[in-house]
Amino acid sequence: MKKSSKLDRRQLLTGAAAVGVAAAAAAPDKASAVTPAVTPVGVSKRGSYETVALRQETINVAAIQSRLMSIDLRDKAKTTKRNLDRVLRLVDLAQNSPEEWNYERRWGSKVDLICMHEFPVQGFQPWNRKELNQIAFELPGPEVNAIAERAKRYGCYISFGCYAKEKDWPDHVINMSVIVGPEGNIVSKQWKARNILGMFGDGALIGTTIYDVLDRYVEMYGWEATMPVARTDIGNIAVTAVGNEPLLYTCLGLKGAEILVLSVTGGSNAESAINAARQGRLYTVGVGNSVSPDNIGFAEGSGTRDEGTVIVDPRGTVLGKTENHHEEIVRAQIPISSYRKTRRVQELPMALFLPVLQQYQPVFGPNAFLDKLPANYQEAGEIVRKRMAMK
Image (cartoon, rainbow, N blue to C red; front, side):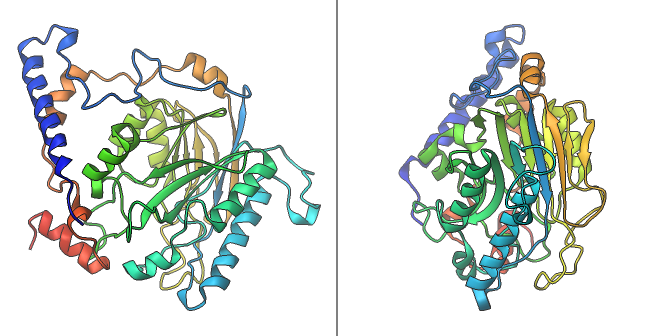
C-alpha cells in the first residue's frame, strides 16, 4: 500500500509536543505549561465531559458468557447460520423472552444493554488472510442486521465483536467492536486499538487494529476516533477487546466512558475488569467466552475461568458474576443518572506524567500494516520480530 505524503504531519506534531515538554520543565508552576494534546479531542475537562440526555434513571445490563463456535469454511453458510441463530437465542434468553414463551417476557425484567464477547458469531481460528476475508462481516450486512433487529425488537443496545470489512480498507480485516441500538441501526463501530504482541509463539495476529495503520487512520478519521466512546441515551459506552492495557482504559474513562465493556475472547477475567472499574472509577463489564466443546482445533477450555464474566461498579464492587465456566447470563442494575451526577473523573497529575509519556519510545512502533499486509500468522510473526529487532 502506498503511503500518503501527509504522514509527516504526525511527526511534526510529535515534535511540537516535545517542545511543550521543554516548556513545561522551564515553567512548572504555570498551568499553561502543560503540553496541549496533539489535536483537540473530546476529553474530560475539570470533571466535565460530553454526554447526551438519558432516557431513564437506571438501566439493566446483561453480560452473555457464550461458547466459541467457529465458522467452518468447509460449510460456511450452514455454520454461520448455526452460530448466528445461537447468538439470537442467547439475546432472547437475556431478555427473558425465549421462543418457548412466544417471545413474551414472563420472567425478570427488560435489559437495556446486552454485552457479548469478541467473536460470538464467527468464533476464532488461525485463519490466513484469504480465509479471514471469507468470514469477515460487512457493516451493515445480514449477520449484523439480524442482531440489530433483535435490538429493535427489545428496544435495547447490544455490543459484540467481530471480524469486519470496510470498503476504504481493501483486503484488511478489522477487529471491530459493534454497538447496535433500539432503532435497529449500528450506533457505533469501534476498531480494536492494538493487538498484544509476542503472545502467540512464532506467529502474530493479522486482524487490523488502529495501531497497525495509525497514520492513515488518523488522516481519515482524526485523533478523536482513535479511542471512540459512544454517547447514547443509556450512558457513554466504550467497548474494547484489548486486554491488559490499563492506560487505554484510563484514557477511555477520561474521554467520558461511563460503561467500559472488556470483551477479550480467550482472555477475559474478573480481576482485570475489577481493577479497571476501580482505577477508572467507571462501571465495567468483563465478558468472556464459556467452555467451548468442539471448537475446531482447540481444547474445550479456550481461556475460560470460573466467575470470569462480571459486572462491576466504580468502587470495584462486583454487582453480578458468573458462577462457573458454562454458558451463562449475568445481570445487574446501573444507576446511570445518579452516577453521572456524582461521578468524580479519575484525576491525573498531567504535568508530572507528560514528560515521561511523550519521551518514552516503545520497541514496536505503529503502522506495521501500511507497507505490507501479512498473509498469515507466520508472516505477521516475522513482521513483529523484524520491527522489534528480534532474531
